[in-house]
Image (tube, rainbow, N blue to C red; front, side):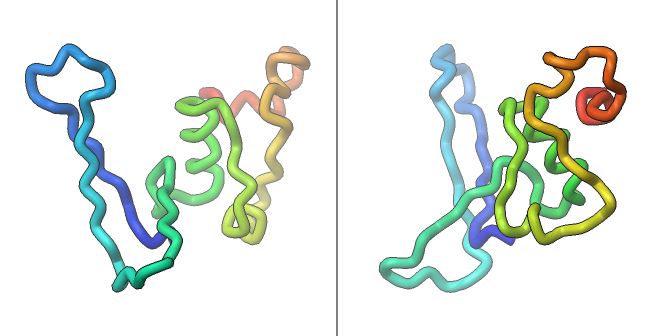
Length: 96
């Protein structure tokens, strides 16, 4: 699990797409020199749901230690598999 979970809130009445405020809530004490890692999706999702969200939203699949170590019978395909092999059904469930 990441040490922090980011929360983005769009600034009210903003026309600038970069107008976000980030609130960081630490789960543990943060010491000087500690590295803070942020997650791109809900860390409570299972691996398949996390990979689906990452692929749809950001265009990549994570291969962090947690994702590599978590076994749920799901074998990820290369990122653009469905673009190169449109008739192959194996990656369709990620994009549905």
